[in-house]
Image (tube, rainbow, N blue to C red):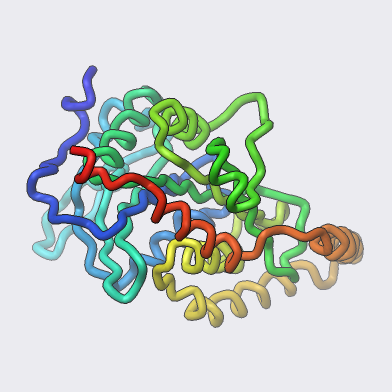
Length: 293
């Protein structure tokens, strides 16, 4: 199987993009409570986007696990909705750049081919950096704003943005595979992750989505409308508070999580403003793809 068999795109029809960055979130192992994909979908909501490439779902999914859905369209015709991995362009004339966004579903099989599809998209659209966003279950309290942490294998980015270098060894998801693919092809890549309270992974947690969006807005220089999530955050926090109240054991556990979290966040970590300023400098120093050609 070649990528031409599964990646549908017409690169020549894509107009020039302004300093594009590839941003990726995939529902699955690295998307606790759906916080990462929800963040990107919120960012793109009500914004005109253009689908520039589509990855055929058939070779990548076990449909007994990721089942397609039946629905009726506007003409009352019965249709099948398959798992989608569409790559879209979002233009931000009021921001610093345009984004190339993949907000989709983690594939079950053929991860190397899938990763190649994503990399070729970045290459053909002249993206100089790829940013993966994810969410993981952590021992943190829902009553605090979750921190966002970043890592990169790119030595220059790690130094400039004061990000950690990956040290994890063990089983990984498709994001780990893509990060290795980007590194091998010398495409600078950053991984941003936010924590989700481990006792809320079966519920929505818009506070984690908003934390990711705040970082993306400052680092990438594009508006993400994260402030508009305030009412949704308040609504879900009230639901979470109600679930904890009345259970003395859970309340005690929450108090301990709050104490531990407050102690950890006293450690200095790079702010979103620091990351944004250095990220802009890094991008300005990258060679122009069109000039090289």
